[in-house]
Length: 586
Image (cartoon, rainbow, N blue to C red; front, top):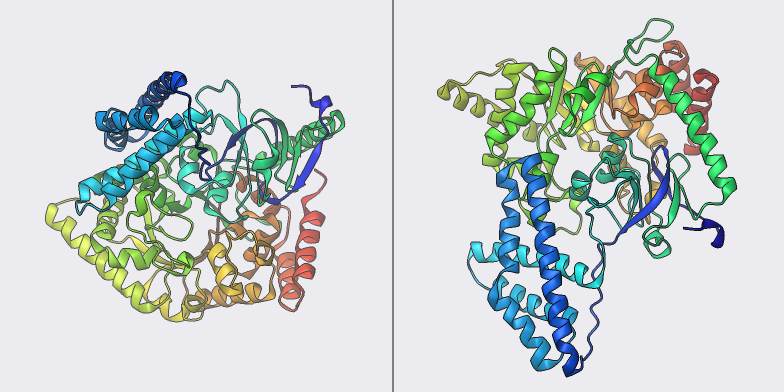
């Protein structure tokens, strides 16, 4: 397209994932479709039926393609959901009812189909039969897809693209992110979201630039518009001018030169110039290839997010399926440690069909993580047995999320012991000495850390949730996102309290939240007492390079000053000045 014919527009949002990308937009809007109703002339109604038949064929082909892709990636069990979807499209009663709406009432096909599918959804929802109720979700999914095809809208299917596009959406859920073709998405921009939403964290983990919280980007961008996405500054440029293209070409080159410099120390230890060392570990979601893991420069996996295995499928993964996934990464990283976090569903990570989870007004403080696992003991023990079996193949640690009390930690450990006993009865191998750790991400857990330390072997601080709970800020609510401040004095003091508790108890403390992935904060966490920093593959090279260019003494001096400060902006300025003064010329 001729960008010179349209004026450049710059929109600022939240810098969510670093990087610069330039390319065409792919607009994916999940908001409810507006279905227009009108009467079609009798001599035009056959055309409506023909459009319906065409949309049916198009939708069936899309489902066949999706089934093949999911079967290849996840297996036949997960792919079977699309068999049920195909059955909906072949339901003669539904098809006849739609055609009746067209011929007898004269409605346009979009409204006719929408009316009939809603009628089916309502009828099936009122039948007290679990199998029939499961069909409701199938009808909703298929109806949405078919309506998109009728209306010429695009769903998040990018198989027709020959080059990478910039994904523009109202929001991107963790389930959406799991299904994104990473070779065809060069950046993500959204109306909603915050820097610590789960989907954005996943974007950072795959090195995809992202800008979120843009409010109306989906209204201002059309499919195919050329964009520049600046994930460093939180800027999106629509129809960039020649000057902007030139400037960002230079910025991209400069950033690439910096990345090359960071990569030069990737396989060296994170050792300061005065001899202090911090272990650099990796956050993973299970989708990484063996080559990606081995090339990361990490000394192990500090956070294996197991919930993605649950989000990708249409049902609960079996113990055997989980074991095979965990074993692959454990064997790849052997003898390096792999810390596997037990299921952390809830908050912004909801399973499709609301399986296990419930609709809550405040899900971040509701039925999630360890609370859910202790309620659904069979599901939890399936996972614990799978992790234990994987421990026979390498160095495995188990970590419980969202622990708030000694009672929860003890209950989880009792279920772990039960799972060990069941494996012994089966004669299946596992490491009986596997270490158990507690995530510290709730203020209540922070202030009883000395008690928790008696029942576990390590702590891992989840800074994303810890910050939102300390500051009472919903981290995925863009209206209060500006109040989410890692540099808040209350956050600084809470972190120091946790590190001190770990040191007094003689157990190591790691950090796996997003603060660990920011070089300025990483140095502060190191000074406070972090034994390990677990970060995304994209963040690891820069942090390791920075650590190697500072002294532990200098970092501790900065920490002492930070703990005396009362202004978050002052803290931020000090940390970024420390980074700039030590990173050198890039």
